[in-house]
Amino acid sequence: MKKSWLWIPSLYFAEGLPYVIVMSVAVIMFKRLGISNTDIALYTSWLYIPWVIKPLWSPIVDIFKTKRWWILITQIIIGAGLAGIVLTLPGPNPFRYSLAFLWLLAFSSATHDIAIDGFYMLALDKKEQAYYIGIRNTFYRLSTIGGQGLLVMLAGLWEISYGASSPAEIAVPKAWSNAFYVSAIIFGLFFIYHNFMLPHPPSDKKISGSSLSKTFLESFGDFFRKKQLLSTLAFILLYRFAESQLAKLASPFLLDAREKGGLGLDTLDVGFIYGTMGIIALTAGGIIGGVLIARNGLKYWVGWMAIAMNLPNLVYLYMAYARPENMALISSCVAFEQFGYGFGFTSLIYYMIQFSEGKYQTAHYALCTGFMAFGMMLPGMISGWIQEHIGYQHFFIWIMLCTIPSFITVAHVQKQLKTTEASKPD
Image 1 (cartoon, rainbow, N blue to C red):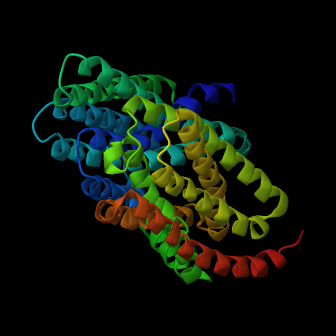
Image 2 (cartoon, one colour; image 1 turned 45 degrees about the horizontal axis):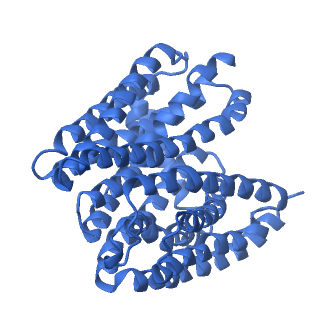
Image 3 (cartoon, rainbow, N blue to C red; image 1 turned 60 degrees about the vertical axis):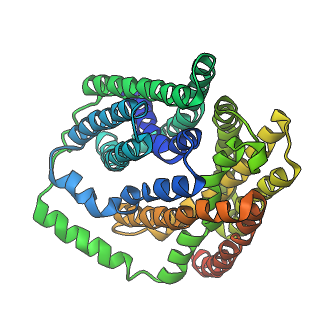
C-alpha cells in the first residue's frame, strides 16, 4: 500500500490540471487577450463536448492497449497541446489557434480521465480503493490551486513585469505564453515520473471488443429503462442552470474595467482570490456537505443544498451594484459563493451515485456525468451574449431568475427520495 503513495497523488493532480486549464484558466486568459464575453462564453463552453460524450468512446480505452499506456500517451499529448498554446499566443490570431490546441487538450484530458479512473480500480484492491479515495480527491482539488491559482498568478506577475517596458498587446500574450510553458514542462515531468512509478497490474490488459460492445449496449439500454429517469435527467441538467452561466462570467466581471461595469482587478488579484480563499471555501463546503449527507441522508439535505448552491449568487449582484474596491471584501464574497457551490454540489454527486447503483454502476455514473457536462455547456454558451446585451447588473438579476428551475427539479427529487429512502432498511 505504501508504494501507491508514489503515484496516486501525482496522478490525480495531473488529472485535474488540464481540466482546470481548459474550463477556468482559458476564460481568464482570453479575457486578458481582449476577447469579448460573448466569444469567451460560447467557445469555451463548446469545450465541454469531450466530457459530454466521454462515455461513448470509453470502450476504446478498454479495447486498445492498457490503461497504463493510455495514461502515458495522453500525458504526452496534453504536454504537446500546452506547448502548442505557448507557440500560438505571441503570433497572429492567438484566439483561433490557441482554441484549436485547447480542443486537443479537452479530448486528451477526457481520455486521460477515463484511463486514470480505470487504472485506479485495477491497480488497487477494494480496501486500498477506499483508503485512497480521500487522497485522490484532495490532490484533484489541489490541481485547482495549481491551475486557477498559481498558474494565473504567474501570468499576472509576468504581465506586470513585461508591462513595465512593453505595451499590453505584447506584454499580455508573452506573459501567458510563459505560464503555459511552465505547465507544458510540468506535464513533461509527469510523463517521465509516471513512466517509472506507475505499476503494471496483471489485470491491466485490453478487453475483447465483441464482449465489451455487448456489455456497453446492455448498460446503455439499462440506463434508459431506469425508473424516474425523466425527473433525474431534469435534475442533473438544471440543478446548476444558474451556476453554468455564472461560472463563465465571474472572472470576466472581476477583470473588466470599472467603466464597463466590472471591478477592474488585475490577473494577479483574480488568481489569488480563486486559488486561495476560493478553493479553500469550495473544498470546505464539499467536505461538510459529504459529512452531513452521511449523517442525515440526502433526503434531508437536498433542499438546503439547493439553497446553498443558488442563493449565494446574490454576492455577485451585490458587487455589481455596490462596486466594492476592498480586496478583502471581494475575496470574502467570492469565498462565500464558492463555499455554497461546494456544499450544494455535493448533493448532485451523491444523487448520481445513488441513481447509478446496480450491475452497470460505473457506466451509468459516466452517463450521468456526461449529462451533467451537457447541462453546463448549453447555458454557458449563451451567457456571454446575454451579459453583453444587458450589462453585468441585469445579468446577475438574470442569474437569480435562473435559479428557479433548480428549485423546481429539487422538489421532484425530494418526492422521489421520500419513496426510495423510506423503503431502505436503517
